[in-house]
Image 1 (cartoon, helix red, strand yellow):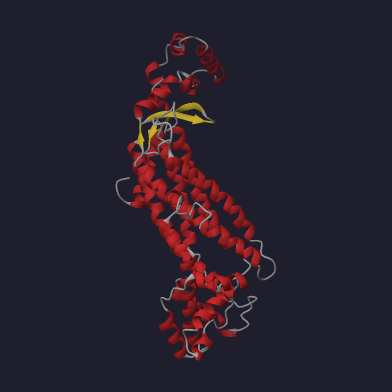
Image 2 (cartoon, rainbow, N blue to C red; image 1 turned 45 degrees about the horizontal axis):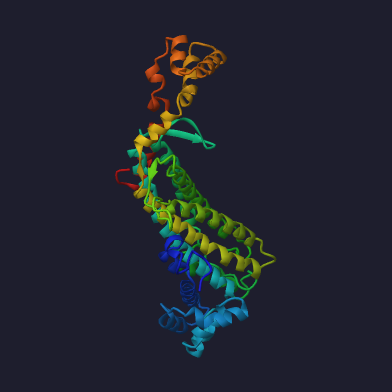
Length: 439
């Protein structure tokens, strides 16, 4: 049974992600914990803390072992963490000597935090690859539609002419910015090994050397300060994933608007209505918006989880478990949906132009003011345009009063779009440089 659409049998096809779900689920976390225990034993043996024979046995018998979460559930409920039950399970497979050597100098949080860091690192690699794909797709779309004129809407009202390529570039630039921030997070996974209250009491002066060896074996970073109650890195990781999910949700919001009845400027594959056969609902775009909002709510919980009391805090730690992994799944799902949606998105250029033309002279009024302001005081130019707009045919009225104006260029939507085509092509080239291909 599942209570979340992120992993439910009913909803996960839309809101979930099979790859990331399997990478971040309980079975994956337990397998990562076993991997951490093996790395700890080998590091301890290398520093003479436990015997080489014990570490070799631990590695031989436990490498690749995947505990069943269900068998550890009772122990996790009793102890608040699965580590004591996991250790009992592991020691049952080991000799007395190896059983005594495992988990040397560690506390439960060391093992869970290190395992979580492993999973986060793997998940971030998947997210980075998907993000790169979406950036490439936006670059291709921006370049293709660089001169496709459309109405630029602000606060739900038509403002000035723009191009669809420039709108796509604004979507994609947020993704490029997110990629740079996420790249920093990819290298931030840290091994945890500082003992019960973070003082290295059990390992003493061997602690840093053991941590360094563990970090190298696991592909994580090592530092000399404990992070049992310093959860800013976890909260920051979630925040970057949420910001990325929000940028994808913004794309979804725009696509919902552009596909709306009465606007109809883009087409995407959609879902049908149970009673209205004429409808094609923008399902993927709506899901992007829903996932962005859900992730934002989860981030509030993740920020609260950073409020750890004293040296370790079980309640705050549990709140982190409830928030961080779902945020990453929501982010990964959003990238998958966005990539699929944008690859199949079709811009209706004639409809875009027709909607702009239906707005009349208004979208060109600002251009007229600044054109007149080259020879008139700006206040006078504005007054002249306002008076012309009160006439049945504003362009004819304006040209009659100011014959020096060129009516054709004044209301040319591509010229009125300013640097929009340039912005779109520059973004497309940026994507091409970043991702390769023909963006």
